[in-house]
Length: 298
Image 1 (tube, rainbow, N blue to C red):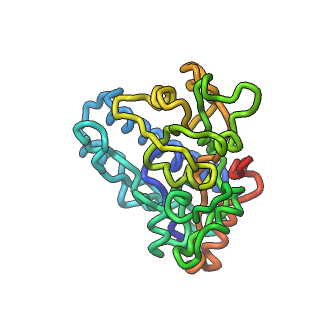
Image 2 (cartoon, helix red, strand yellow; image 1 turned 90 degrees about the horizontal axis):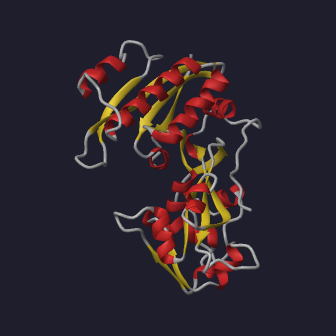
């Protein structure tokens, strides 16, 4: 049986979205649930919300089965929290499917692994595509097809195939005194706005892409201080762009929730140069019209 390797994140929401998709398409519910449960438990330990009797090395040995590819393996990484504790993260597992065996391989940066031609297929956040390779233009980014159209073929051979539907949104937020009283808080308002716009430093290029560079004339990016919550930072700036699910937390802080600018979603990525009949078959298995993807801009 042919085995196709697929780069995936080592932890977090994007990895869980991939596991859920394979559970649905390949009947791998048991192994997917076990991996997700293990990583949630280890995250709780790393955050100090859970205690463990065994040390991290004993837990790693107990979780990993190196003798059987269809059983998951895990690795250790230094977490970026205070003290940089060691954290158990996903390493690999092989899942049999009707299109051959799919070997999920954990990578810190799956998108970059595809850019370096280490894999033909991979999953990562759509945010990283916008942050790294999408061309900035005066007009705002349109939709999923426009993302691929704005990738310079001289820069990378990687393209987005589809999203997985695990959507949270980069959303416009503003204080009531800054938000327009008789119109929507949307891109058109930003184009007329002058002043501070609070964002995360890592999303600077993404915000420029989804708003368009013309709309940001007269706008100054500001960033949260280390001790600030995102909502407080936006309130101090007057307006900002941050990830929201329903916007309820922002509203609790007195903020007006405006337009959803871009869906932050896990996406299936393909390196066109590395494609084969086998990888195409796996990509078709993992994609599909049944996915409720929101990868489009209003």
